[in-house]
Each structure stands twice: as C-alpha cells, then as structure tokens.
Image 1 (cartoon, helix red, strand yellow):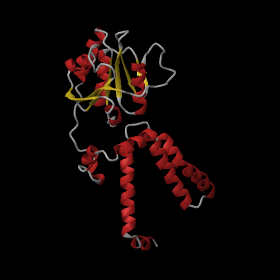
Image 2 (cartoon, rainbow, N blue to C red):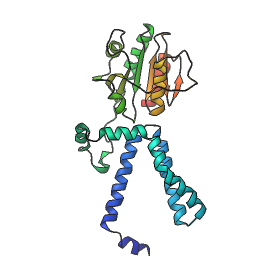
Image 3 (cartoon, helix red, strand yellow):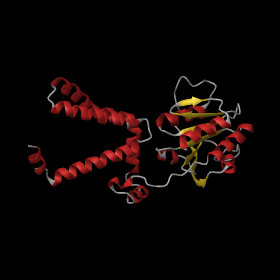
Image 4 (cartoon, rainbow, N blue to C red):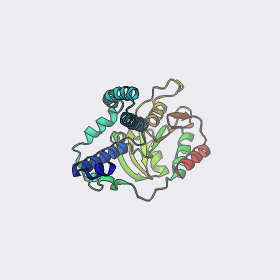
Length: 260
C-alpha cells in the first residue's frame, strides 16, 4: 500500500511539497533571531501533533487542536504584525529583489567565513565615553540583521573604530541621538530608532536610552550596550534583561564569551 501511494505521487505534489518547504524556510529566515521564532516553532509543533492525532483518529484531541488551528491564522496576524508589515514593505523593493537573485531556494545557507567582532575597540570607546559622561547606545546584531531598525537611521558602513564611535556620540554631533547598529565587524548605521520596553522592573531613574536597549533585546537576539550620560556608568542588555554598573572588563568578558 505504501509503495502504491509513492507511485501515485504526482509531479504537482512534489512541486507542492517543495514550495511549502521553501515558504517555511523563508518564514524561518524572517523571524530567526526574534522573539517570534519560539512562537513560530510552537505553532509548527502544534500543527504536526494535530496531523498525527488526526491520522490516528483520536477524535477528542483532533477536535481541540483543530479549533486551535482554525483560530491560529488570526493569532499569527496579531503576533507577527511587525514581521508581516516588513514583508509587505519589502515587496517591490528592487534592492531586495536583486539580493534575492543571489540565492535560490535552499542555496541561501550561509557559508561565509565568520567575522570576528572587534571587541576591544567597542569596550575602549565605551570606557572613554563613560569617563567623559557621553551618553551612548550601541546595538550589536547576531542572527537578526535588524533591517527595519537600520532603515530608520543614517547609513554609515564603516569599520569599527574607537574614534568613530566617540565622534558619533559626541554631544554636538548630528548623529548622537539614537542608536548605532553594528553587524559583523562594521558600523551599519547611526541615529537609529529602537522600540522602547514597557517593563515595570526597569528602575524609574533610567531614561529612554536604557528602555530602548531592553526593548531591542526583547524583540531580537541583539546585544545593546548603554553608556549613561548622567551617571557615567556602563550597562548592557541581553535577552530583555538589563545588567547594570558593568565594568569594562566584565563587558569584554561577556562579549568574548558570546562572539568567540
């Protein structure tokens, strides 16, 4: 019977499976490195379980999970509203289309040589800015490339440099207000606008800079480093948690463990 089913598989069925796999992979690429990836994996798991219990004719579980799946489309729209908006904005963008030509189906797997983050220069710049009480917000991307936040800022596309970071956050600089985003070993953009966290656990004496740092790490796998203008201390945020009064050595160790 199994062999009969295999022989009855049509070309259209193969195309259907390939297109579904491609769509699934592209959705994964879109949400990887964000908080939505766990929800995405959870929904896929529930769907697969529903298919299994349906095949085994478990009526009660099939009915319950079926109701969950039927409402799941609305839940997806609500949960992934920012990502859906990003996809719609990308449609028709010629730059994106040109980039897509460089990858087709599953050839997008990254084989690039990893770039070592220049941690020393970032830490030294933060230490100097803390000494001079220069406020700063530096975001270091990981899997999520933070394209929607880079688009809100001013493109820089420069190698990491202590002087450049300090110059960007100098009080009279037109780029000092907002965040610097680093990808790989390059400063991609400055003056970027980040989402602000509403966490009640963040101390009230912290301003928007610290809340933006927590906000971006709640919505992505990025790391945010904050230099306080008022107190002259260094803090960083990771996975939505804020680590206060961090010494340059502690920050360096954290980044070393994470990126190397």
